[in-house]
Length: 424
Image 1 (spheres, rainbow, N blue to C red):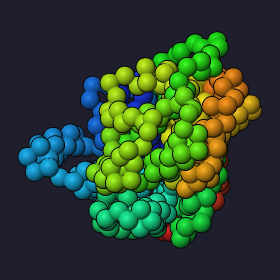
Image 2 (image 1 turned 180 degrees about the vertical axis):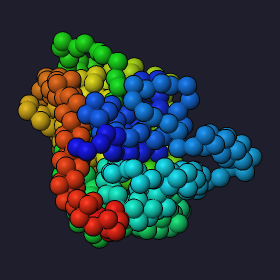
Image 3 (image 1 turned 180 degrees about the horizontal axis):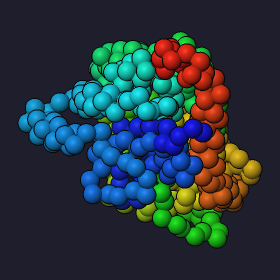
């Protein structure tokens, strides 16, 4: 390497005391690793507060927190739709972030794609852009949402997945990206099969949440009522409709089972209307709403179901595994890859398949000891997984890319009139 501090890492979220929120967690640990290798220029986040890092980091602008304050004050009185509020936050972040792109940046690594101005400037300066998505490709998600709403006869309402302005901004931004790194199988596949023109790199790994250590030596099988749980901020993509359809089948076919379904988390209006219309009288089911104590909820379960149509993580599946709760999860969820390793800690089902969900719930009910053992396997898979491997894999990849770029740079004495952007 001819000089230090080459890679600019950008996360839309903010720093926390010892990590970062959302995908900023990955950005935080990657920045620390790159700094050790003398490859980091800086880690840029939306806001930083008073937190100090062992590596160069800063908010996207001194003024960004003031803009956020103004936006939040306006939202308090004008009540913006959440997806529009998010969109304007992203646009402001992009405007500030573009100013961070300078000629001494050799790589740009980002954890969110809504950066058209930033990417455009980087491209003009010949700076390679690497993007690691948290979720499957945006157009794929929109297609799934619209299809599902038609099937469920739910009136169309705009949200973060279908808001045309935000999706257009994504499509305009992604065209500048050189390489997408897919760490979840579904993320990799959806970008690989999309119209994205750059390279899609498969690098399977997981963003492990910061759970407080919990020691569980043995998981007791259910001896009384078998408790099945679901937890999410429910929109149509979460697939709750298929879990409820499975539950109706169980009640109809096996009315005497000592079993109960607990549904927790906020439910959006359209899905709530669907539940009221089709499942108001569903037996042995309870809608709990927002939970004051997630740990107690999970500790009381014998099975956790994640019926999502598509999802990067999800976090809740790993949280259930943390408490040794066995998981039924769809194949389109990234967490299924981790939980199914070695002795599997989950049962994987196709998306939109209520019958398969029903069968796996019944299997767990009829094989309580095996289900409890599966929960312990889930915990072992999670506890034994090191996120450091993923961070080092990404850092190694970026370093190799940087070395390749350096090898292809001509000697400046050969032609003093060749600009850097022309070279790259």
